[in-house]
Image 1 (cartoon, helix red, strand yellow):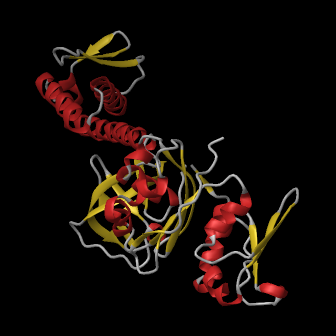
Image 2 (cartoon, one colour):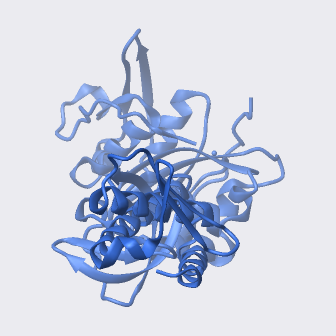
Image 3 (tube, helix red, strand yellow):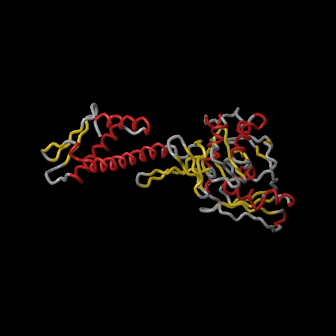
Length: 357
């Protein structure tokens, strides 16, 4: 490899792979040192190789003796090339890792490239990412060449290889969609406080408005439902209930169980547990509990309270929520609204705004 070829190689890798030129020069120097050690031997002293950054000239020494690159021969050149490419591959992997690890939780857009088993390989700007089956919304299907949006769930490093893992099922995916579609959320005027989600089925999201004149529900729904409709379409038809954030737990629980009517509520809070007994009309038990317990299950996760739904006169019924509350997704808004079972955006009732304290 002559000096001009070295300079062309460094410049090409720097431009195409975004690898710092100094890292490439050092990789070539270490590769040549390895080649000298394997093919010439280092018994005479320490081996050093230096490349002039301006001219590409190579200066190699074993102890006090200078050697010319031509002395190494074809085998040594091949060894140097193998080591050099390995070092450059490691540098490239580190750059990709550092680039995407800073973007964890961010929304990215890519193109479906191929399928590996049940996982989808997505082409991003600088690398390929993987969307595992566990992070795919149920019942959605893609074809090669289709555009796909997801959040970066994790970035892993194994040797010289960096793996980017995507997710469309994480609650933060819903959060990222609201930040893109709702300017008030992106600007911090409307804040997402908590999210409870069953991917592909339903999401409950608690909002708080930090400005008295901004209705968080109206801001999120948009004119004629345009904003929320874009989010639902991206979620493959998943229903979204927008709930006003309340500091008072009884108000938050009541809103999270809507549209069921609450007749009475008793709260019991201990050191490590919080229980709410909620009385609803007998004919609204199924509505409060939801299909397969989904409504009350999401309410438990959103509020952080165990919720026991009962009919009047303490009549026992099936479907009482026994789930322990999962840690809600912290994050911000105000007003009351939901997406009905028919998928159309609706405004429920106008409620007083939550305290911002």
